[in-house]
Length: 292
Image (cartoon, rainbow, N blue to C red; front, side, top):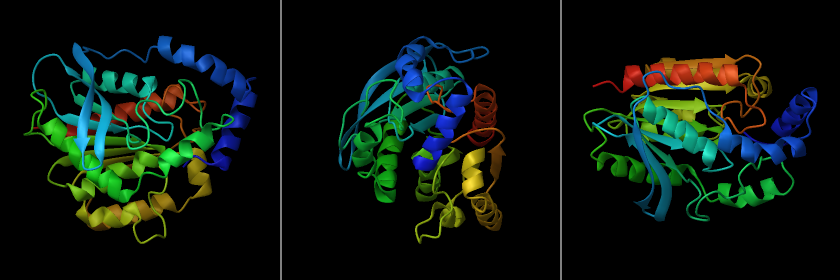
């Protein structure tokens, strides 16, 4: 989870690269607009649009991208604490090019439409954390499930979604746990869930996500940052015990040399090699669990 410890680790990482956070952030907005994620082999042509999804609490602004022909498994993408932005749209489009109908959601729609901070902003930048936290506090395990149900209903109503196939979910940072919560809440529709440097997956709280394992029928991918594991080395063992006890097919791995936030390409902690390996495991998960 993003906090002063992960900020410090990232600062040290940037210093080793000869950069300050200000220098990185100043250039990153333009970089994200021009950067190219590795190309998709046999990429499908896609259609993309901004859409509005009705929920029990209002209307969520989202980005929907899908192959231009046919019906495909649906996927819900929950952004990290910085919110919906270009890098997550890029990742959603890349996934759609691999044959999925992808909804990238704005989890903060109750308090802000679109990106909550300027493009290129980082959690550790001056003033950014103070701007983001009120939005983050508007969310809860309950809003995760109610919003998730609405997003599933939206996808199931789209001609480009094959409702004979289950839906995948993927979350980053604070939304890593959302994939588990939604899989437990809607086991008949959620077939796969992937958490990337997710926070709070196995805690001592009564509502800890790992306690939901007996309700989960989806296959899972839990990709853990190395510095997150150092701070909470028991979490992966609690997850493994919970999943094994419930018979959940889960791949749990600590990715060597990674910092919290290593997967989004606009992150100061981005590790391309390990992010690509995690992405390959995501595709393998979806191919296995979301097949007809």
